[in-house]
Length: 160
Image (cartoon, rainbow, N blue to C red; front, side):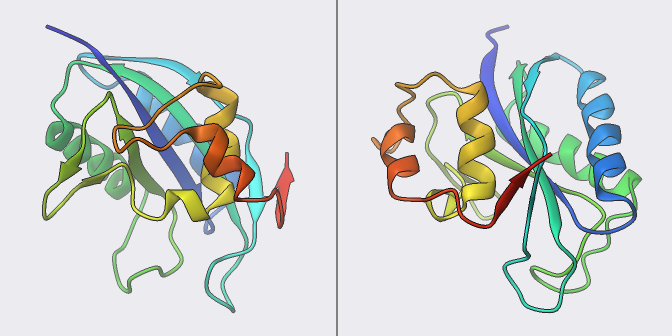
């Protein structure tokens, strides 16, 4: 089976967020047909919505032979196993795992959009991704990571 590099965004703002991310990383190591190849530093940032606790975020690099929807299902199982409840869109959460990039694929399905929408606006995604990805990383939609970084200042982030 051919393996593809996927980048996974990790986020939490409930129930000891740093521990939630550490536990998620351990779960990513156990995924079938996959190998965890790297994890960025952890970053803290304010929530996108007022009144929520601050988020802890990171990005993981995963080489996988799973198909994108299979990986999505596995990530959602990890979220559910760590107490994720989907009560409100963009609400606080114990764990959020998002497929940011999946090889050189453009995916536009009901359940999955890759590259992850609006990642170019989110420093808590781009800066951890930049720790793991080569400087010349080009997304499947033609954008380059270094260009997105230049347009998304390191504001509101704290590296742990």
